[in-house]
Length: 122
Image (cartoon, rainbow, N blue to C red; front, side, top):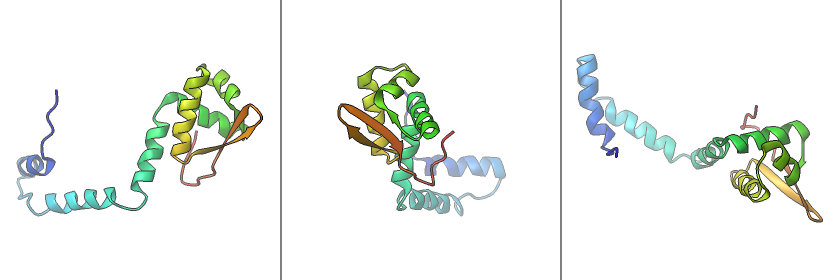
């Protein structure tokens, strides 16, 4: 089991050993930089999107939807080799991240990209 320690406490002595210089000047500055980025407006949204694309099957589904503009759930099922319930779960994660949207036509559910310009899809 890995024990998390305070990186600010560990980093200072390590930088001093590596550089031979006092690290007290920059460690708090960069800790504040990380904190500022983490609390910025789009950070949580970007993180949610990145995590949603971190799964091979979800990335494959998004790539398929990109290539065909719109796919029904059964077509995504065929493309990914997953069962219906798993495809539904993955597409729900992608919808929650704002990457895809769906429309229903009778019993069929069709997915398409939301058109988010900041997301690059292979």
